[in-house]
Image 1: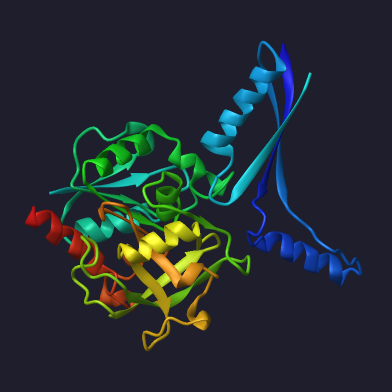
Image 2: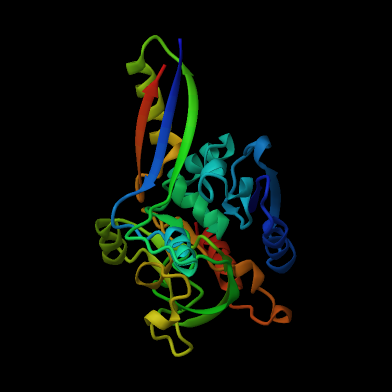
Length: 81
Length: 231
């Protein structure tokens, strides 16, 4: 079965996010005041696996080996069929 | 003695590094296309600057996962010298040859200018031609050069004298004002655990001949060559 897996890579809390700061500033210039703004990357990945659990494990391995840098980033994985 | 300069899709300082090693320092040097791998042993490997794979994912992340980098890690594990410059520094960090990561500048724009650096450790294979505390002038050209590492890693780098270069002012003072990209504690040159890897954001290959306005960077290549000759 092919599972649709959403992988979200975010900066760990407390890490400076200059891009998010610049976007927030630009929004402010347009009159949109925001209390906070974070910047994440979303990957939609199709993974063929026996069950949702092994698809999730595979996606987490991808995060560990390539998609996220553990020094500054965290990840979350959501599996749907 | 033989050096290798790696070449990935998107490398753009490879020919500059090759020129300095071959023509300025007079060392036999091979340009290695990443797909060809390292077919022989080398005394020193330079991972040059550029924008390998368009900086997709994270700067250096994709180049790090190519087979030639496994060869480079094996070379480093055996004590061989590796110099990572700019994108090469990002690749070195992604490859865990040095701890931490080089990420987007505090003010998120590309910076291209000359900076002053203080030599923090003149005992390494890359810096022995300098004296400790010497102030040198090199160009930087990056958008993702802000060094970030865990507090434990930063403490270990300092305790083990593995900070090679810090951004400073003309007088050698390491100040917040002389930090161009928000890097942690002005650090911009980091030695690997065995001291045989140097990852640095400034470009020594662009400042290795007087005609270019500074030859301060040449001493890095001179240091590597002296170290290899001393083995």
